[in-house]
Image (cartoon, rainbow, N blue to C red; front, side):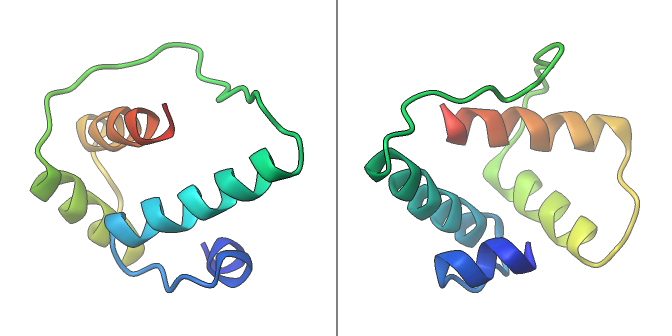
Length: 84
């Protein structure tokens, strides 16, 4: 997160700011000829989520707390949707 924040110029303190930083980096890579990437997931879990839940999961992990598998899957699912 620190490196992403540094190279994107975005202070990452929420899920939205994480998405903003990633969007800037995706634009950077596209500008430099990258048109394809592999997310490396062996499966795509689906857990229903709300934006509020995802923000809570982001903050919990940011504080160094452990996540339940269900929370990890909710976050991963929302994250992959953002990347798509």
